[in-house]
Amino acid sequence: MTDSPTPRDAGVARAELRDDEARRLLGMLAPGGLPLRAQQWVADGLDDPSVSALADALTRTDEQRTELLAEAAATLGLGFASVKAARAYHGERLVASMTAASAPADALGMANGFTDTIEESVRDSISRLFRPRG
View 1 (cartoon, rainbow, N blue to C red):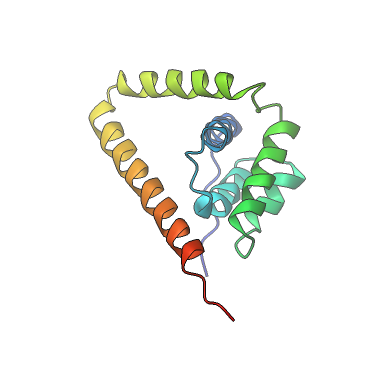
View 2: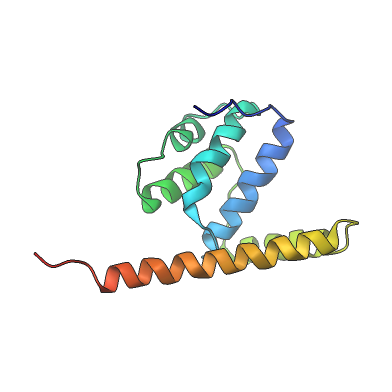
């Protein structure tokens, strides 16, 4: 049994959800961790049926999880008008994080996250190529 997440400010949750929505549009999102993040967002006070459904989506497919994220972002007004807008937002966030006092740790985290995203994408591709026949 896991402990309930410690509530934070709802603004933090909204920023994280918007960051994930930008990554989703840019094809950089690893949806496997979305349910745990959504559980934190619910604890933070994001009261939205899509966020709650995403928090309970441990057994759903990655596609269903990303659809719930897109729905939550749209409902909460955190979506983007275009991929270009998402790219600009993501770039601004990266620049801001690289100029913060925590930049060295952030850079390492970003590199690790990027590596994890690539690894997950490769695993998904391999599993699609070598599905058991029968």
